[in-house]
Image 1 (cartoon, rainbow, N blue to C red):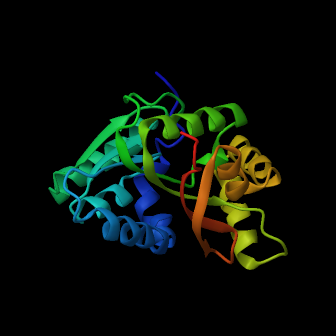
Image 2 (image 1 turned 90 degrees about the horizontal axis):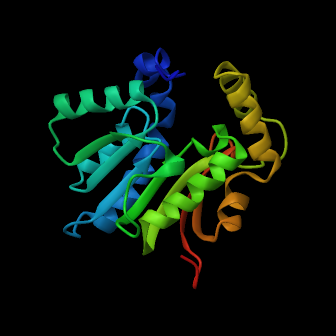
Length: 217
């Protein structure tokens, strides 16, 4: 059996972690809801969906969503929400972000939040290429992750503790991601043009709205 680091944490994620992420998820829902609620057939992919909260918020806006995560335990929690909520517009699938099981240019938007930093460099780069591959030419990307924030804040300290609790490898990957410039540098490196950013947790995490740079797919 493949080791799943979230086999225990997935059971408590909604109660312990999710409340702190609600503002970020509400903003994501607002941005995509305003754009796609009145667009029949709009199709959104959420990569590293966790317990599926974001996907179900989008589904309630009438948007079709594919919720994807490599953790069987997280996908199991997502599926429980499908049964309880009965929204009917979320399809959940267990798969790896670095090897997305979809054809090219099929999604109108991709949501990828707070997962890039925990990946090793090579997996992170493969994942970036994959989300670009499956997105349509003019797709919108809603990305959220750590940035290189100057100075010490209480939020930075607390986030560091949380990251360390997630495990040594997770923590080290995250530190390396930040040292390399964090989310905004990463988007630029992979040909995504940031159109807007929104800071959270004293500016240590940003939500970015991005698109393919002109001439790059």
